[in-house]
Length: 239
Image (cartoon, rainbow, N blue to C red; front, side, top):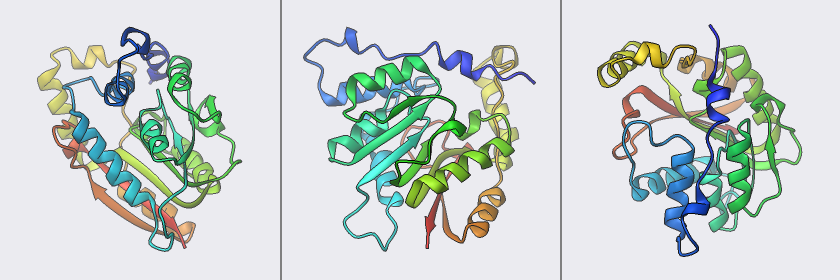
């Protein structure tokens, strides 16, 4: 099956220039999230999205690291919405995304110069960061073998932890397709050549075991998020 997600994402970009000079950080963040695809079914509130960010930041910090993480790298950073919030807390950031338009948008708002346009598997392992995470990206990968290569790069790049958010659950695949069919009448035609990759928890458990890492799974509970019941989060910590 062809995978045309890259072509679709390359057409997306932020519209910060239309917001005017009076736009505050909340409005900027919401525009960055919209650019990243969080406008597909229904709009999410700032509080809901910020709540997920705060939970992510907490979970990326292993118990042995006092004072919280000081640097974070995002795989599939898009327009930089998540990194925008990290930078507000003086946390050093970096990221990679294969959409040139979204990376250009990220460069308009982020302080970091460590932004790269490229496929996830091509990210450099240096410089290293306290944590390396990915939000709503693994489902767009072509196959599990590719995902494992990306995980390996994330492991090498991270000093302490890895986080993968919004992993589509293989056990919920049929329910996901049924739901999408109900709300999108021409779902199969519209999403032809735009496949989603579903994962089992066992794949991440094996990776953690092979790399001597602790692992934690978490259910998605972002208020108002239609995808909650179809995805899960995974965090892994170096010992």
